[in-house]
Image (cartoon, rainbow, N blue to C red; front, side):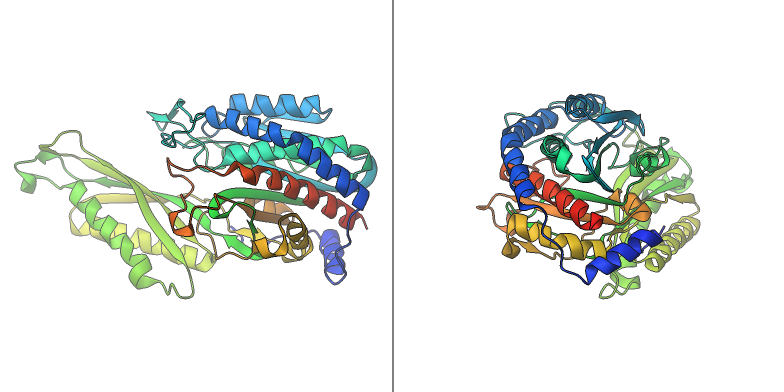
Length: 440
């Protein structure tokens, strides 16, 4: 896993030269025409978003969503690839003039969450997650991402003859992570050639949240969102009657001690003034009956860090805590930590070049640098391959104070749909400015 974005030599030199120059204004007539196309598609974007929201699908199961996307891109006359990384879709829009290749990415999957928003188009869908029937909801806002990129595709297709370059539209499955035992997500799309034929020079993505108000955008240069790894702990004790716990080894008690001890990694073992770290246990399972001490217990959780050395140190501390506590109680325990995703890292030159575009779309007073985000994004895998720019768009209603913002992944998560049209404008104007300036 890496922490610094990789640039090809040619593009690095090109961006370096541009960073010391003025970021040239793109063709004003084309910009105006593109704005008209965004206005024309705005109502459809809301309609698509509501339809997708009402019909969410879990990771690697985005069959309906991918068909909706593929049919739309084909109707725009694009070259369309389907079945990339199971359900991913890639559309290629070749502009009428020569120029670079820019990728725009949206993620498509929902989460195993029962929706409680009460919206007229709320999800009532069910799915299977790790062997259990679960509710399914777009609790992270990916429905908005898909609709925004569908709108951007339509607007850009309308001006294709004047575009100086090529745009690849990447609709990605399984951003939330593929089911255990399966491959998927950005890493698999890359392996299956999503950034090739034609080769992509840069990639742009966005995320919606209530972290800021509707009509705003936020971004950071370099490290932005955390790296993330899943850990799984299996504890083996000795089953016995609940009335005779001394006759066995209770894995629930061992697990409880491990959960408590893991909290000391952040609170007592890492200098959090220098290195933000999160260690969270989100799942604990054991036993089937109230009066039986079970033989096994299991738990899983997530690790968030912004520094590769700290990440490795946290991994070592988790393994030591689990092993020593289990041994002290006469139990056995194993720890598995998956590779996870790297830090979401915005290329500094590309960020400096594209930031002014967001100022033009949202107004400079509505664009600002947020704190580090402990959420993670597998968009970071694309950024390992080519320079990337990732930003957030605000979707908290103006009348809702920041302290009452509803976080992503909540069953109550919703967005102010006023965020959608500016999101389409941002993606289209970023595309136009990048193609024009990288060409020049």
